[in-house]
Length: 289
Image (tube, rainbow, N blue to C red; front, side):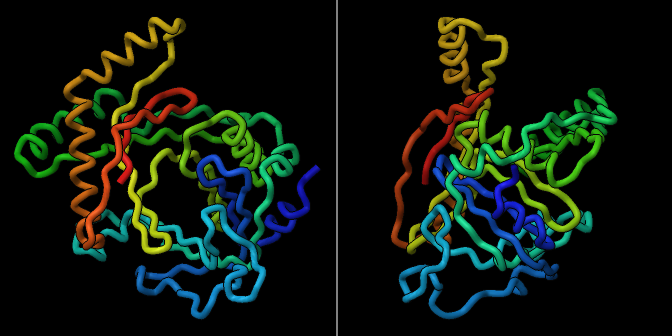
């Protein structure tokens, strides 16, 4: 049986279900949406939020703050800072929190769809192994080797077709992530009005709360698949941690994020770590800034 608040949520033009870290509640947010051209066009709420501090008793988000909008920012907005970016037409979408609830995870989870997701077409990678390897080699030789870049992510898209896709199937995937994944910063299911965004991201890019800025640089991926015994896992993990590539890659991403924090944190800060971030199928290395 669908949770009544989820049923209400699905009547909205766009909506989101978001669990922050290991919170025992899930934020349900939904409402009208609009597309804007630049980040400066995102509407900002004014006045004292109705969160209990200003005399009201509005819902509180898991982080202690109040949601007024959910903003979905495409990568192409990097052009606002003068960088070149391919414009794939993805809109800068702003979803209003016309409906906002905090629901206990224990109450929500049993009411989410629990069916399997069937594929009508298993699909495949859009780029062949050979073409992808050639692209990586070109980037190493022409960009990294010449000092034009240091931290590059080369995308490779896998496309498949899901049978009977819709709200129920999306929520079934979300339920599976809530039940099986761990170590995520956000576990989310977002319906933008015309597409779904579902995932369990391990990394906090940046958060600002009560004047405190936090970033969470993550690097390195140690996969536990195929390692059956404790001794095998321990040996492989120690080898991974001794790998100079992994060590210096983590240092590099920390350095890059410290540069960004220095632009906005004029009173200094703290670097905590390194730590291991275990997830269900892999382990990352990370720092907390």
